[in-house]
Image 1 (tube, helix red, strand yellow):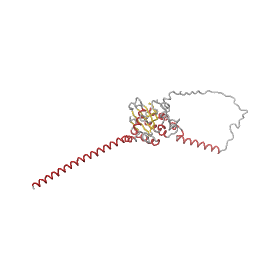
Image 2 (tube, one colour; image 1 turned 45 degrees about the vertical axis):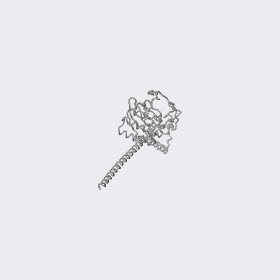
Image 3 (cartoon, helix red, strand yellow; image 1 turned 135 degrees about the vertical axis):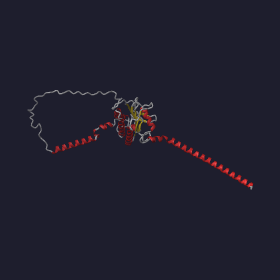
Image 4 (tube, rainbow, N blue to C red; image 1 turned 60 degrees about the vertical axis):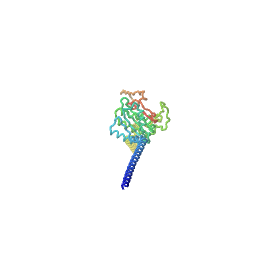
Length: 331
């Protein structure tokens, strides 16, 4: 009996030891499996971030078109400009961007805008597509404005049209009417994007300085300029109404004239031309009138109609290889 009891105890100890060993091995296997799963998930997440990281950044900036780094506008004005940009973008099929800063990090205004386009990939129809960018540099040492057109806007917002936009915007900037200036800029961009006259959409670009470089080659004669549209009396509703009234009065007068009896007696009916003559005449001095006209200056190549020296701008190609039109002035 003692021998049997001893054998039973030894058998139980062996079974307990075996169960403990199996449990320990299972825990170790589970720990390794869990670690492998976590490592796989981490690698998968890292791969997704690496593959779509740039797209995520661009998507975050897709709805933002006003970058007021300088703090030039109030929050209300920024929101309003964002709304206007969205509205006019749809009408003109173009991204309309505004950027303000006082730190170009050693770059020119032209280079700064080029880098912004390369970094954010603006475009209405696609990444790096049709877009117009405006920069206001508020650095006292280089305060100025720069405008560039990319994609289809390189042709429709070509150098000549940019100069006309600057003519209208510049006086507002001088008067520190910055919000009104941005509003005018957006209105003119959408107007020109829908104006075909004066545009060559398939230009043959020459070398820089040839007069046929990027932004210059797209100019196909004069455009129907925005300021001319605004000044045209036929585009004024009140003027149109007034013209209609005048035409109506004239028409009624003509009908009244023809409907009444015609007068056949005139001032010459009873005049005796054979015995009538001028018997005396004299000249009396009344006054002298002098008119002065300012002689045109010879620096028209350096100044636009709105004032300001064109110190930068013109078309070009960004470091990322994107061609554009352009123009700018200091203020």
